[in-house]
Amino acid sequence: MPDFVIHFADPPRGTASLRVQAGDAQAAVNAAHVDPRRVLAVEASDGEEAAASGLVVRRFPLRLFSQELAVLLAAGIPLLEGLETLREKESSGPVARALDGVIASLREGQPLSAALRTQPDCFDALFVAVVQSSERTGQLEQALREHASYLGWVEALRGKLIGASIYPLTLIVAGVAVIVFLLLFVVPRFAGILEGVGGTLPPSSQLLIAIGHVGGGHPWATALGALALVLSPVLVWRHAPVRAWVTARLWEAPLLGPKLHVLALAQFYRTASMLLGAGVPAVAALRTSHGVISTRLAAALDQAIAAVGHGERFSSALQDAGLTTPVSLRMVRVGERSGRLGPMLRQAAEFHDEELSRLTELVTHLVNPLLMLVMGVLIGGIVVLMYMPIFQLVEQVQ
Image 1 (cartoon, rainbow, N blue to C red):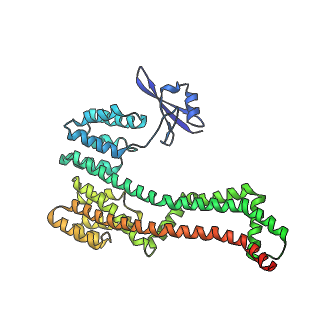
Image 2: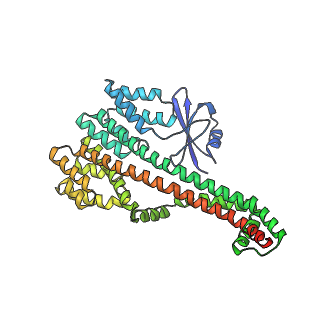
Image 3: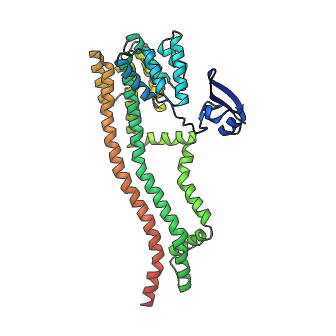
């Protein structure tokens, strides 16, 4: 059985933890003989949080944390007091414990970056690098705002992609449901009527009637088969080899591949811009960007890191590694001459964002009508095949 760590309120000491073995989170609470009202969180042995006793567990809200801490620092509140303020208003157990760990490290005299590094599950290497560089430059507030803006862009991009996929998915599910309804209820009844009338049916109608008999005789198997057909792409996508193969094919597609390349570059430019703006040296900024760049560009980034490390110009290194577009290359060169490399990289990312937004709208306007056409042909084809024998019989009577 898996191990669970139960964090609960202990009035003499404040909080306490207990490790037990159980089948699930609720069973772990029962086995520990802890009052459920005192349970703060139940943590599985793999570090993932489990819901128990009505506790709502969520990921650490890094974007909100950056925004709120930047606002408190701008208001003149000291860093430690600002973190304590954020801790006092926090109701989520895991988030509160992470802030407690950071605050405890700060009270021991550690810098903020070192304190954040003690909570790797909540603060990634990118955020720690931004904070560490801003500590040297004294621009922590600005760095936090930049990081919050970067996370906002990532969330907006994810939301845009999810929003664009909702209508096609709804259309596919609705179309499959209509087809299943026809095969389970409508086609078998038509088959009985046509078999009673007699006559020779077209081969296509005979096939449809045979399918209707199978569906009518095994309705649950047909429904489960349709459900499996809808869910199979999601289940297959969860396998890393399949996902890697599909991603590779998409990157090689004539129209979509170059756009995916530009999207990966835009994310890279935003990350590098944020790091350079926080005062991170160029080589360190490129190395830190390695954690967020697409795996398809990882080798090219390694080449650029080696070139910059040997003293080559930033723009030349990116160009030789294939990490530029005609627009971004000129912007990077201007940034090198003016000493504003970070802002120019951000402007290059914003330029490509507009291009990708237009592409998303174009694909949406093309895919949705195409899906409607496909579903219409499938459903209409079933209806036509059902009525075709009737039309044939009418012609024979006449």
